[in-house]
Length: 264
Image (cartoon, rainbow, N blue to C red; front, side, top):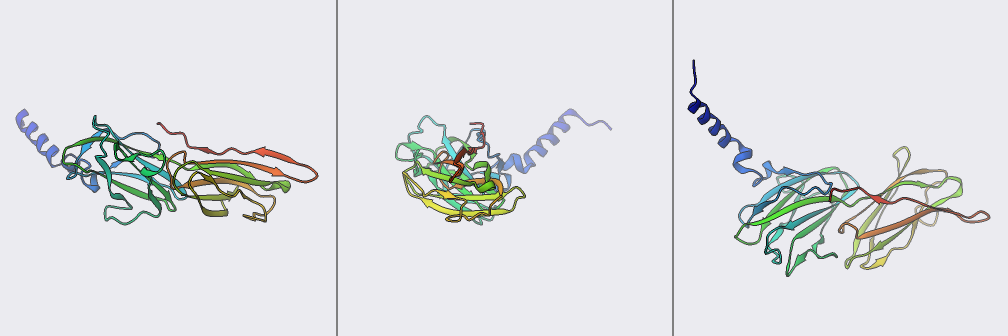
């Protein structure tokens, strides 16, 4: 039996119209756009205060991220786009994410407020989880934007207490707001040796943390890696460190502390 071209076209159009992803795109949570936390911007799109746009990324435990919204309109001097009610959540039901969440757009470099048209949220995740994001405009007219997620975790590939050495970390907060910082250290077998959280006041440094008996008290002859996470914008927390021994023999060896490379 032959089927006419017109019938085939009609069926194809009906299937396309009935497809939920085409009908709703990412205006509903179930059809969110999945992003990677590598700085890659989302496709530019528009929204207004009646049409939310949904996104999602996978966060890992003991890692931190910045979610950044960039207004692409010519009138970007107007603060016309914000996350709706600081809307990051763990699922479509609206449950809270696990960890520390802060609206970081008022933390240097400032990205929201009068004459600034973008927004930023920081998350210090204490569990592997999906993070759902909803973007909604504050005005009735459509506003065009991009969304990107950047991992702000800092990685120290090697610390050591071997041979009497101790490892030291020095932290500086370069912003105008207090930041919550977590230092987590694991040994070569993946066993957690230290997990400490502390606040660093605006534009200041924190007391030096070290593996010795006066602070973290990690046993001798251990080695491993560390992560440093925070709930402030990318680059807010600067860290320096070294492994050293002091006494009849003195030696100081720098250690590497880096962030993941991002696309942007």
